[in-house]
Image 1 (cartoon, rainbow over the protein chains, first blue to last red):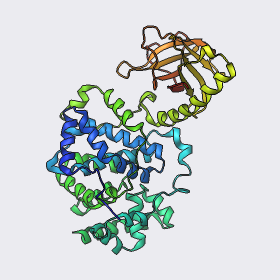
Image 2 (image 1 turned 90 degrees about the horizontal axis):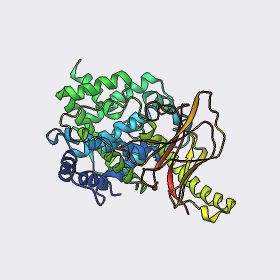
Image 3 (image 1 turned 45 degrees about the vertical axis):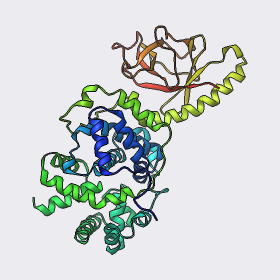
Image 4 (image 1 turned 180 degrees about the vertical axis):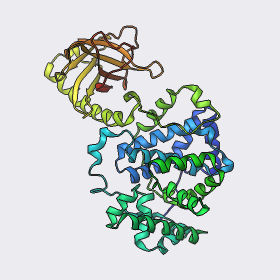
Amino acid sequence: MTAITSAGLAGPKELTEALRLCAAGDRRGLRLIYESEAARMLGVAIRLLRRRDIAEEAVHDCFVKVWQRAASFDPTRGDARSWLYAVLRNRALDILRGEGRTDLVDDFEPMGLEDDGETPEQAVERLSDTGALRRCLEKLNPVRRNAILLAYVNGLTHGEIAGRLGLPLGTVKTWIRRGVLALKECMA
Amino acid sequence: MSAGDDDRLAAEHVMGLLDGAERDRAEQMLDNDPAYGRLYRDWQDRFAELDLSAPAITPSAALWPSIEASVASLPAAVVHSRAVPRPVRQARPSLWSSLGFWRPAALAAGLAAVMLATGLVAALNRAARTPVLVAVLVTDTSKPAAIVNAFADGRTELVPLESIAVPPGKALEIWTLWDRARGPVSVGLIGQARSVPLRLDGLPRPGPDQLFEITLEDAKGSPTGRPTGPVLMKGTASTAL
């Protein structure tokens, strides 16, 4: 399985340059980021939001924010792609946590109960066989691994994960804390 | 707070597990505390591959144009501001700019426009009156509630599809938005839902994707010249078949 290296992906330097163009008000920068990242961003947003129309909305809002905030990106303090995905994830989580979305409450109701989209196992399988993240996730107790992935990949809250896994809330919180500690140690 | 607590906070921050107050606090630390920023970015880096290996799903063709339109409508001062603060969450974005409303509404309207335009034209059998553009205005439940027809000679009319209860002292005001920089413009005011020609004199001819909406306003019309009342229905124009 090809994990990261699909065609059309811009390198960190190109993305940094594209953000610089955005900060200077040059739309070509935004287009370059779009060409490189929009499809993958939509994939990330769909895993979090389930619904494609809302996921596209999150990607839309993400690009508007990237345009507005490009000047605040500091290449000495981090990677352009991480910055871009943080903008996307924050927007998607805002939507997911119900910011001003009463209009869609009904549609949201069955969410997470029927169509789970990609499972945590599938998300792990997409990771590179040789990468540290996959190796270290696979070392974790499966329940802890699932809890971490349900949060990061599917956007579930502590409470939702507890419900999904049939565990008390406190247990889930503790397991996730221990899981991320183990993950950090393993990846160090 | 110990470094371990901050690290735990950063991990859960990146995982999206913080709620309300805790998340706000973490966002503030991210802005103001370089040490926390490093912890946060370390966690971003650890999880990054999960995002980069997500399935690539081609966005709909409408996504980029809608991004361009939104970006073009931003005031220049915001775009070029250097000291960009973390944007305050918009208190309550107006429906005009709410994609949550527009995306499903536009999809529904697009579909409905095609069906209704075809159906109506056949039913009315008035070939000479075939509109060049049709906007189906839908309610917040995506139910078609009125049609705007624009004809080749420049006439534009509103045709309600269902009656609307208008309280005494109130009226229905019809708005159009063809230029986000200028904002919505009133093109008609009616006391009750009825067919009515729209005043588009002085405005450019309606084009595809031009927005129309009806709000409930005072009987004399919106006091501000902008929509102030609840939006009853809205839709975008599509080229008629």
